[in-house]
Image (cartoon, rainbow, N blue to C red; front, side):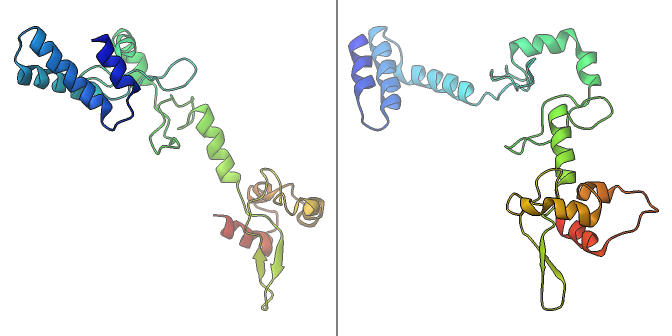
Length: 202
């Protein structure tokens, strides 16, 4: 058997693993005088069940999703299933973060108190709210502003390309960045250019 496995391991032919499994099953069936088709069906069922098992939805202490496969008829692996059984009330009382991962799945972390997001997605959400276009613009034929197409650096008026104009923008608009203008007091006057910048940034 060892020589057979070594021969398949060094082979570069396609479907090597499938042929290896098939030949091993045939070898076992012949040596132990078993029904080859029945043994193949049992192994196929076993492999199908193993490959179709989903990933555990538990979250480890470092906030990363568990990489273990979930047990049958559950969303958790054996370790996190035990945690769920011993503390179901604690787990169910904690709201889940509504943020989305880069794979477009809902975040598995708990939302922090007073927010719909975990710490990471709360910061990301706040950054997205504050994101704006660079305040640098040129005027078209009608005198309307054509803003730079790049996003401004977080907490700044300008993008990296126009960063040399940052001090001019702060002096001109009298706010440190667009988010500060957006959250100004009601009695403070509006600025037509900045209102257009806000419209283009959303």
